Amino acid sequence: MGALSGPLHGGAPSRALDTLDAIGTPDRIDAWVRDRVLAGDRIMGFGHPVYRTEDPRSRMLSGIARSFGGELVDFAHEVERRVIEILAELKPGRDLHTNVEFYAGVVMELCGVPRSMFTPTFAAARTVGWCANILEQAADSKIIRPAARYVGDTPPQPVPA
Image 1: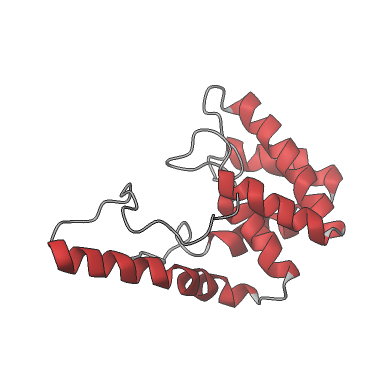
Image 2 (image 1 turned 180 degrees about the vertical axis):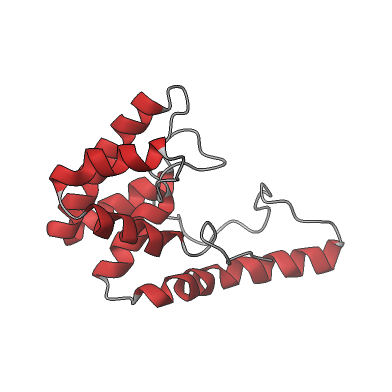
């Protein structure tokens, strides 16, 4: 039901925070990012296989991070701004933006979740959806695709935006 192993699936939020740690200070952002991009490395927390514009989940988590405030949040926003600018320059036409992992790591860190628990926390949050997919597949024996649409009952109250 879910593949949460490897550096790109499950470990990305802690690796995005490792990136912030490695950069260290705002004056090191440009050189660090350029070195990694020119070496062919990924910048964790940027780009997504589906979203070709800003990941809406990242926008939401960015707002949550801003509500916490503090040095880590200010630094993360500065890194985000510069990485997007540098990626646009070095990888024109790719339109790479922040993905959910970047601010998920920041928010979980600010909530006091140990980095070693980021992936289990993510998995626990997905368990209800995975169970729903299993029940749907058992009832219909039709393969569930990632782009599946919810066709269940209307929620009893409006879902907040």
